[in-house]
Amino acid sequence: MGSVCNEIIKRFIVGYFRIFLILLVLALMFVGCSIGIGDNDLSASTGTLKQPVQNLNPSRKDIRLSSNPKSDVFVDLPLLLWPSFEYRRISRNYTMTKVEHCLITESEGTQLQIGAKVEILDEAKCLYVLLSSNDGLPRPYTITLMQIKVVATGEKGWTWSGAIELDKK
Image 1 (cartoon, helix red, strand yellow):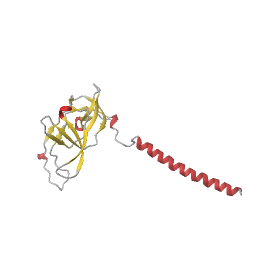
Image 2 (cartoon, one colour):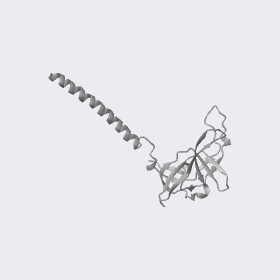
Image 3 (cartoon, helix red, strand yellow):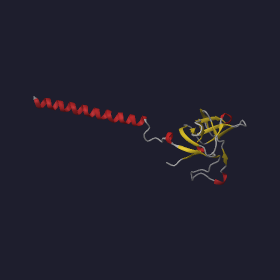
């Protein structure tokens, strides 16, 4: 009778030990995912502002498609800081598929200085920006926005991702 009881107790402990291990692993995974382990941590990044430049007609990377680097057209983007922007799903290139855009208005931005030190706080979740320019024309760009804090002034806002030269770590 004693060996039967010992066997029952042993199975009980082993069964609960397995459940405990499974719950422990799940808890560790949950904690690891919630604190962003493995994510690109931009919040600890710093950089220097530079003149943002955008290629309006980039040559294609796909070899099967025709490509001519001579057709590239580069423009300087306004080096501005916007207090906020709007997300909107907009069709691109005459297709019915809508993609996430960041909408900004040039007149709502404040001037930034090239060479200013900044801290990167966040990155927008859009790959395209639609700028309502001062001349009233909408200007689409394939670029995203970064939320920054200007170290010298403490000012926070959004600017072009291409306007930041990241510091080496």
